[in-house]
Amino acid sequence: MKITDVQACVIGRQEPDSGGSVWTFVRIYTDEGIVGTGECNSGGPGYSGFATKEAILAMKELMIGEDPFDINKIYEKLRRKGRYGGSSEAPLIFALTGIDNALYDICGKALGVPVYKLLGGKFRDKIRLYADCHFGDSDDPASFGEKAVAVVEEGFGAVKFDVDHTGVGRLDAFNWTVGAKEMSHIIKIVEGVREAIGWEIDLAIDCHGQFDLPSAITLAKAVEPLRLMWLEEPVPAENVDALAQVKASTSTVICTGENQYTKFEFVELFEKKACDVIMPDLAKAGGIAEGKRIAELADAYYIPFAPHNVSSPLGMMAACHVCASVPNFLFLEFHARDIPWWNDLCDGDKPFVESGHMVVSERPGIGVELNDEVAKTLLWNGDAYFD
Image (tube, rainbow, N blue to C red; front, side, top):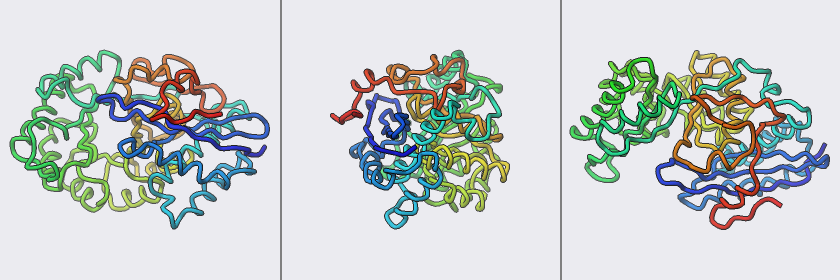
């Protein structure tokens, strides 16, 4: 089998408060008529949304004529060819992610097996999800607790809230120091959610890398009695040593990895003892194979694997195959409660999410396909659909 064509398009709509719902899809065509589809991060709709698509198309000629079963060879060929152009950074690594996932989709379809069987089988049939609730319906701490209770009633065993967008305000738009008034407000929010859901539901808190070092340490120590599942990205991702200082200062579990790409960046996190849980985004960290490599590295350090996820059902199912195939899986994020068309965008075994879980598909390949009719109505900024 040989690759004959590679195409890409951007699909989605930036829904209010959705936290991201614009994705790049790549389709790889073969001379045997088998077509694979992969999803990856769009490279930032806040800029144009087309950065990843352009990167995919720029790699096309290097893939034509290759055997799609040579997944690792193709990945390394593309990555090494672009080493001096940033192939381990966004958006090139995002493009590689979509390509890798599409190749796995082809191989699974060609062999008539789901992707997890290509990864050595599965440890679990269902993938536990935590619901990203973003924030309350108002800035009142009580509204966070009310929302948490409603989400738990949907069957989720874990919830996550953002605390970097509260209405108290800071010194200015660029200073990352959390003042006393804002810090007190944030702590009340976390305390309120814990009180509302009790102690048998896991609770994560996301800072989105928006706090400076002393503020992050203050918050981490203040919430120690609340037994968080994790405190996420308390400082920006660029300085791993600063994150290690936060971790060393507190018993609160520290999670990071959304903005680390490939196994090389995760090795630094592990060696510097900078986190307790990792959350690579499998739509931008290199693809299915690289996601499993990252998880296996984490397992050697006894670190849980809880991927960040803001994907469509197709990209989320690709992540599920990885989560099923590794022993140290903890939770997968579900980010689409506020996207009304999320289920309609793709075809597969529905409902995709039920009672806080996603069942790993037994269909050949990834097991989820774009619904072409729906997808065409959601093309980003006038983009053209696949031929």
